[in-house]
Amino acid sequence: MQVAVVTFDGFNELDSFIASALINRCREDGLEAFITTPAPAVTSMNGVEVGGQRPMEFVAEADVVLIGSGVRTRDVVADERLISRLRLEPSRQLIGAQCSGALVLARLGLLGSMPACTDVKSRPFVEACGVTVLDEPFHAEGNIATAGGCLASQYLATWVITRVLGEDAARDVLDYVAPVGENRETAQRALRAVGAGRAALR
Amino acid sequence: MQVAVVTFDGFNELDSFIASALINRCREDGLEAFITTPAPAVTSMNGVEVGGQRPMEFVAEADVVLIGSGVRTRDVVADERLISRLRLEPSRQLIGAQCSGALVLARLGLLGSMPACTDVKSRPFVEACGVTVLDEPFHAEGNIATAGGCLASQYLATWVITRVLGEDAARDVLDYVAPVGENRETAQRALRAVGAGRAALR
Image (cartoon, rainbow over all chains, first blue to last red; front, side, top):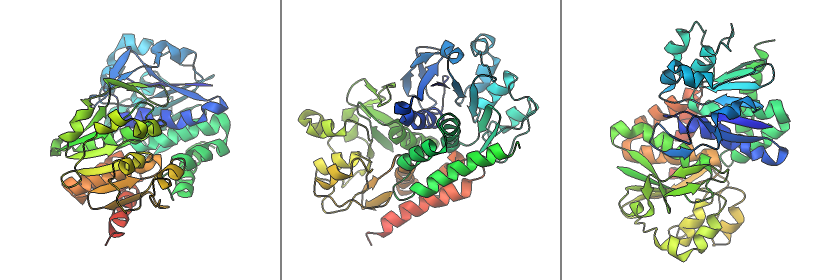
């Protein structure tokens, strides 16, 4: 199972790398994440140049697509050519968005009538798309999920791992990456956030 | 104030990027972090190629030096030439290490008799250097700090921001990056971890 972590110029390192690093702890279980970029290299909001591991077209063959966030997402959604390269299939793929990534899902018409999570800065722009924004870190309905607040990217990863490999695999990853001595509460917090987000649609 | 986030080949993205991204939210307050590498580019443990923002020699002029972690830190400490490029001055600089970064501080003789935090995999190697390893996510004495568990890199950043700009600045950053709705508890947890780590030496 392959995960495309879509990462644009101006990206927030927390959003793309927390999700990808957590998911990549499941590589031996066949779940693997790749930084997926519209150009051979992209530069973060803090000036870090990162080489893409997969081109944008990889989203079409990925099983999971996570849209990262950054300071130029409004340029992304205004860029017809760039948006046309994001061919997603919610019937077949798990699709998630972090913070301003919700704008991309809205632009692609993937949110339908579902509410979304995003960060405080993106909120007015997501609402301007007619989407209700929740005061929560994570919300999923079916194959679509959104997370808000940079560090909620661990919840997006938790959702992906839980959906693909099950709760025990997610717990193992969270236990490993947690601050020493905070293993149990870190895992519980993330599993609760993801469970609560899923429960909301029942 | 400039922060060198020392990042070697095989680095863990969580460790270098969580610390640098949090610190870089203080750029307008004059505190700035740079991915600092021994070569023009390094490749992460998950195959992501990242361009260094500063060469290793930058550590000599930085006000704060954080040693990241990764899967090849034991090669780093065995590399006499690489280690000789890390000229640190604990009397003048704040110096922190994340997970296996504690091995580098031990190799440089910077831990003295202080105990350290590290991750479970690095623990036996840090102990083999004669260092007592704590079951805690963060510990600081004077200008030296160590953190254990990937996500404890937020505590290392919190320590740096608190020491340079004060607790309010750290709280503002944590409030911003926290999962939506978990702002207060995220800030409190980090400030508590850092406070507890400092209190231990009194």
